[in-house]
Length: 449
Ligand SMILES: [Fe+2]
Ligand SMILES: [Fe+2]
Image 1 (cartoon, rainbow, N blue to C red):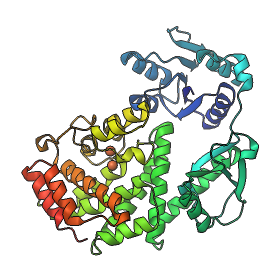
Image 2: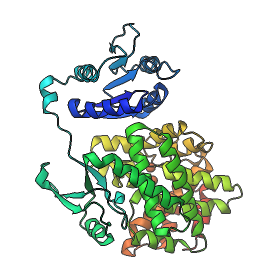
Image 3: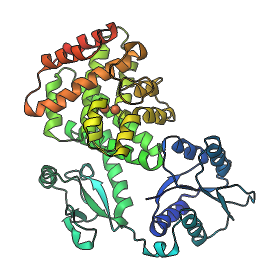
């Protein structure tokens, strides 16, 4: 499917264009609100096939900002510019500021090579998929929720009503789906926006609720993480994601801090008893353990602990599935059967995430470079065969060693094969015997289990 970036100042108009572009041109639309945010998005978004932008949004010469960026970076993405400037540019189709919807859709279709016959056949999907995390037990369904039989074709009969509007979501039913390997449920397309808004409100209120149980807070942080990842994929980091990330990181910190006297087993049990995504579970454990290690270091301050939780929250946010979060070496990647796009993403996710964090307002100083180094390579590309402590910051070393430990913890604990001392022994052998690494492993070995 082609991908179009839409950059229009008026939100209502932008929504209208987006819906119609999806419907008639069959293109995936990413909405942006300024030239600056569009160029920020283009920094890490490789595939974009069309940009539709207004000539001016507020004081900003939006189309000019984007066009200059494209030229400077030698990226010839076709543009449709709406405004009254009549200058000509290769790759740019200019439409007057009063162009109607039909004209805009036609211009977009032409740029994307979509013919009138293809346009007539485009259908909007009737149901939209949402992962299981979105269906929180005890929440009330705002609309009917459907289950789709695996491998069934995409017709109306493939969907069966699973929960009815205004009904409470039953935990048992969700647990059974999870046991059967079902990844998510479907919402009628027309209810999508209300569903997401309602869900965001629920997640935020659980995160902010001082009396919410630890289990509910974990589930809410897991969901928030997923929602932020989705938002980033669609339109980059916006104000709503920043707010949600802020509250989620505070909750992750609070949960990591809260368990400080309990030992790791209790937190681990809670995570294993109430299944969350691997991404969230490994982040929560890394935060807890890394903060424990940092506290023992003579350089370890409160600020460093906050920084590690921020880094942990974001480090794998661009990885699309839990499976992609489990790769830690070139060999593992070579042995796997994942597709080329996923492979590329795994190799470059540290660099791409660092780039993303560079555009994040008020990120802790240096968080971007530590994210870049989180698999041990200084430029964030791939996995080095051995890490070189001279090239890495002390916080990156703490992160890498802790993550390695957490992977054993999550892999071996469910089968009772995890043994703290064995894993410490293995980690000691695997990593170089440098001072910074040794002290990290020493503190890790004293972790109360
Ligand atoms: Fe990770
Ligand atoms: Fe990673």
